Image (cartoon, rainbow, N blue to C red; front, side):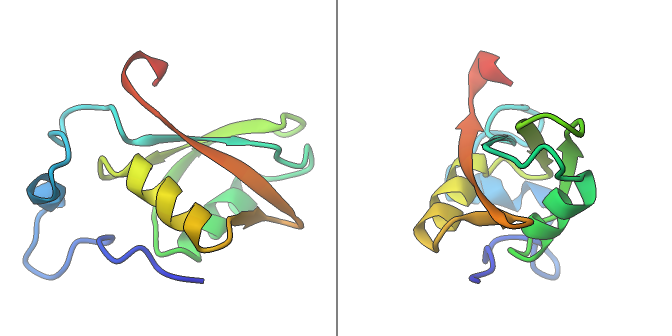
Length: 109
């Protein structure tokens, strides 16, 4: 699977480097949260984290076992780009299931 090429920041770049790509300020919480739908109720935070790590991303996972919806929080404001790239490369598999990804914006976060 393809790695997201702007994460982690390259040597010498700060975590605010995403601003030069037209993203919002890193102090802004928008464009950092991705909703995952269609999760297996037996999924774990570890499986979700690993699925994103396999794509070159470090995330904080917000998920309760037995739910079919979860959230991940990115360190950089690039949720829309991450969703687009993962979807374009075949989707995100968590365990044995492919999940639906949706970048949350503004007051949705």
